[in-house]
Length: 409
Image (cartoon, rainbow, N blue to C red; front, side, top):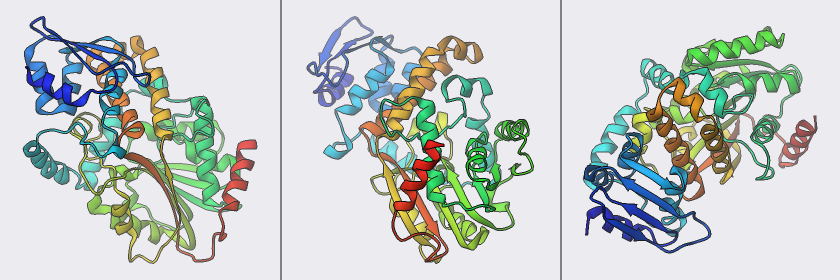
């Protein structure tokens, strides 16, 4: 029996997978299950199967990207869900990982790559966020919110869920008239513009993406609020001044564990004595680890999703109060599903922008990320912190009341 058959026989118990090998042999695995669609794949050469056995995640991605692994029934999301759903995080089964020796080498490499000095940080950001504006328009919502949405109902549209995310975060900031807000990792400016529009706060957004800053500044000018909502191309470590509130959504994943203490120390330095920080980040439910090979190589070089224990170590000893911690479980799976659907619907435009290989890479990325929240060990953490013991109410009622007001508005 081929190594790939042994690998799949151990993995696929629920759901049905048919494999057409390059030599014409056909093998089948698992039994039909309503949770998973039947999937049929074909290997165009023997080497593709061996590539997957050696390093399942990266091997499968590159074989799919290069057309050496073809999904003939179902699609790449169905295949990823089938394989991942047979090894749920909570069941304690080993996920699709490379050989232990390869893992050890990758661990050292990833840890070195996570030392994000200023110049390297800008290069890493540009790798992903300076892609064509048109690409992001095709799969994101109209406000270009490129982070986990908040689904008050799993059936909500992408735009509704992203609006609700902004309301959810704004409510936790407990903003008051005249406050100054710093948005670290402001993206295309949507959160900053929302906070000003809903609360009147003055906002400074900072990013290392040259393409994002152009769009953000243009949006502020078009809205007539460029004097109240400003954007700068600057590393957060170089920001000066004081702010009543700091918000950071989807940026902490790029900081790197070696710099967590510096991140929180800088935030404390920038906050007023009554200041509040709201940080939203992808996080891992296991202990400290490393970024998977595919993501590190193709999607977010230098990126890392922290364990909660690593975040806590980052702010310990800095005299900041952790005033609220929330865990969002399936919200990002729902978000990524909608991004995937929009990407598939825009296939012709994306291929025209780049090529077939890029399109396949992007769909693999979105499919893999979705399963990591549906079946794997990833969640989103929202941490609210304050320099003051008394600035925020002692119950969470104010968050609920303000969120309802913002959503109603």
